[in-house]
Length: 347
Ligand SMILES: NC(=O)c1ccc[n+]([C@@H]2O[C@H](COP(=O)([O-])OP(=O)(O)OC[C@H]3O[C@@H](n4cnc5c(N)ncnc54)[C@H](O)[C@@H]3O)[C@@H](O)[C@H]2O)c1
Image 1 (cartoon, rainbow, N blue to C red):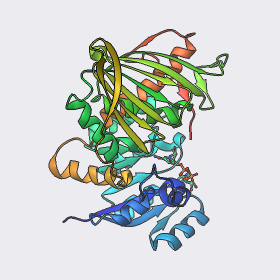
Image 2: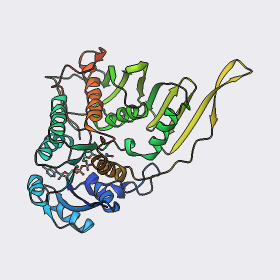
Image 3: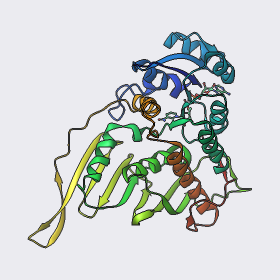
Image 4: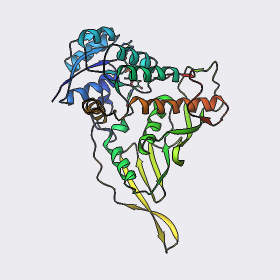
């Protein structure tokens, strides 16, 4: 089995320490951090890390026993020649670092979400991945979670009839949070192309001055996809998702802890009711580990990664379309988004 040399940029929570925040949370299967997932994979060797803060480098060395530590991530790439680089810095740096990492010759990139602060930046990531033949996945981890894979398989097998609409339930910020909800909705529906978006930011009187927001506001949206599919988010609930089909629904409750399948049936031969039917046993496996190993499987078999740059770019565009709809006073915005320079800061 090949061993891939991995390096991490940004040795903070997602890069290194986040597991300790969720040790007893049943929604998460550990390892959650990139370093933990690298160490858990027989196919990956964690060889180096970069962080501008010396105390983060020291803590990383103590926690993971990695001694090749750098202040400058490009120097790390030049010296260590990693096969896989995980970029775990905050949002403003994502796009620039991904482009430079691709230009430096790294062919497997894990890039934290959301990948950019504007579609101009997201376009640059897309172009760099295409030009340099990069396999990229991002941190939208439900896409790599076996529980959501089971749900998609059931939907594809026709268990709920023809899917029509997905509802996501949770109050959430636009780029930090809804990049997850939108990506999960796309994944559950088989990644259809989007046609149009209506969005609102919160508070409703929030003004976008000079095509720029220096905060990541809460948001709600309605999305229309190809084939008559639709998605809505409701700003209440606990990261639940429900996929409605012509003959039933699949629901994930409490951030994927509980799953249910309901099927439409007729009471007294005429009144429609939705009745619970048994759901397959729900497994838990580390989605971070699956995400990194998916990159390796992708390059070894020549297929696109599950969260490849094209699908990631489309999910990102939907987030910016939500902000653009708000900027235009609630207008329904069609895709592709004309305003490539709308900037929304996020962590
Ligand atoms: N996918 C997920 O489930 C998940 C979970 C948590 C965080 N995240 C994402 O991960 C990213 C990081 O979040 P976090 O909470 O780990 O942040 P963090 O602040 O804990 O870590 C970021 C690290 O990047 C370092 N850094 C800053 N500039 C740098 C540079 N130029 N070169 C190298 N290192 C640099 C910082 O010193 C810090 O240690 C965010 O985009 C966040 O949205 C994703």
